[in-house]
Amino acid sequence: MSLKCLSCLLLFSVLLISGCGDNSEDKIKDIGQRSVKIVATTGMITDMVKNVGGERVSVTGLMGPGVDPHLYKASAGDVSRMREADIIFYNGLHLEGAMAELFEKMQSQKMTVAVTEGIAEEKLLSPPKFEGAHDPHVWFDVSLWMETAKTVRDALIDLDSASAALYKSNAGAYLEELKILHEYVVSRASEVSQEQRVLITAHDAFNYFGRAYGFDVRGLQGISTATEAGTADVRDLSSFIVERRIPAIFVESSVPRRTIEAVQAAVKSRGFDVKIGGELYSDAMGNPETPEGKYTGMVRHNIDTIVNALRGE
Image (cartoon, rainbow, N blue to C red; front, side, top):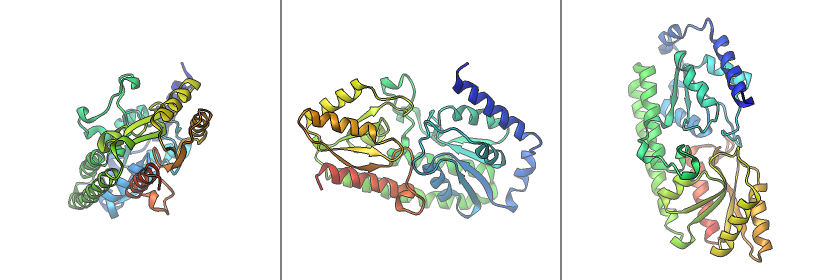
């Protein structure tokens, strides 16, 4: 048995043991007398649940700024928080690695919801190099992320039907905000000529962004940052940059800079200078007190950084 599988088994055992004596049915019965306790994994999901749940919910996010969900391991404190929650929201599509299996197994104890479960399979990307898996980074297409807001809304209504009107109203307002955000990204992307729309980052997180907004996306690492980029990957990507005369490449807040800096150095050795156009938020959002600490602010930051760098501004 691999160490990863053993860790999953041990953590699941802890969850089962710690859940003994926890009468979930009694907890749900009194939900109308208190705030709904929610645990969410990524910052993007945490922010969405807060928007949809509003004053009725108390949300704990497991993964803060700069945290890579592909590599995240639940702590003992996380286990305790999940045990106490009324409902758990996670991304799904294997974004959270081994934790996804735990969430699925916990369904017998409490509501656990993959926010991506409502997205039609034909809308999901499954590049050949992902070996049959769907790309989990759906939040980079704002119009697709809107589908997950509906899943969150419906799950909260199922759990707390007395507050259905509030959840519907909040979700409607948030969906309108996301519609405006999507239109903003489309507008800003149109400022870059088609031949300049090449986005190069540390790992393969921006494929939905590329499809939705017309960018050729290249990542040094694969879908998961758990895989290391090799010398051949750096060489091939640097050759592409030199050939296409790409003006800028980008680092990510949740991935070490050294991967992209290695590409920059390889490009320079070929007689061409490519600048690092800025830092993008990919698998994690910014600090809570900043605009980038919210999903809308993160998306605006990313598209503004990309467009400005590719236009040489």
